[in-house]
Image 1: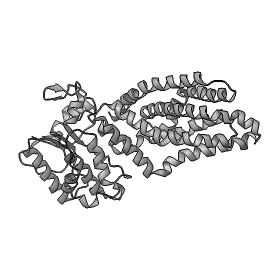
Image 2 (image 1 turned 60 degrees about the vertical axis):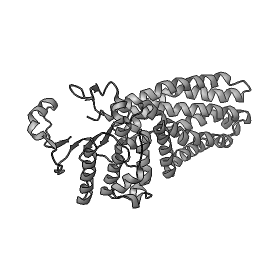
Image 3 (image 1 turned 90 degrees about the vertical axis):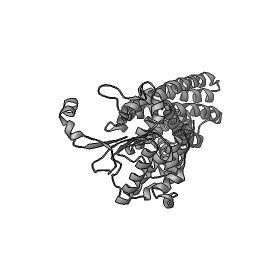
Image 4 (image 1 turned 180 degrees about the vertical axis):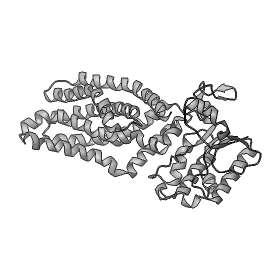
Length: 221
Length: 176
């Protein structure tokens, strides 16, 4: 287990040392969301109606920016070979990297989303559910994105390939995430949507680290 | 041989057990140094080394390893400030920080100056004196006594048969 925590700690430390890379994702999130009022007009009711969708789509696109460096740096400098031959299960290594990724990307997105919600005139009723759904959703995005990043390792133009792989897979997150916030705004309970997101998260926790391990082993081969 | 790539034919065993059956047991007893240094420029020398040591079981001695490769004075410097030779020495410190009976060294002398090569030779001698096994591929003679040398150029026809037209003239030293 010491290797697990060492890996999480190392990735967080690297993310903090290269703070501009981490901030880039958040800045993209804020700027992309801020473009919508210019595009669709600053009408408050219209923005309030669109806010959940805008938040989820821009958060998803911002997260996509962070996946190319999840395994790529380790792959380039030879660390990945050593992780593959480290005496701990490779799925644990993958899970450690995914947790570190969520802490350095998903968590900042989660923190930034209420601020953008205010900017987009999101109904106050929606904030609690927004944060709960975002917490579940960003974790799923980290898991699925890591799987995509591991599969596209070593290919040319892996960034484009990664988006093609991951974006269709996270459509359910988008549907139920935005649906939960919409339901809360409309005064309905969002329990169902949150439960579906929770179920998706549990499924991904089982499948994605294992899939990552297979893909990483292939990439190092 | 490290278990990264799958063998084209046959299998590799460690103490009678094929490594594909219990890879983690084998990995815990093996150190591998590849062409690439696996050094993170954003981390300090010590952080780089402790990370790799934490991945492995067994006692860890970071300071002794840094001392051994003469990097103790640079321990708290970010690794991006290191020269190519110093980076390579940091990579070699990795195999000294935690014990393992088998060392697989892929051209360990790249970028090293003659003093560092002397030091590496000393570490190899100590490892062998302690009963360790070393398999190294090298372009320059490492100057190790009674090493078994496999000259791959002599096996070129067999290698050609395995890999098609790819040829290699790299002599390997197998030290036991």
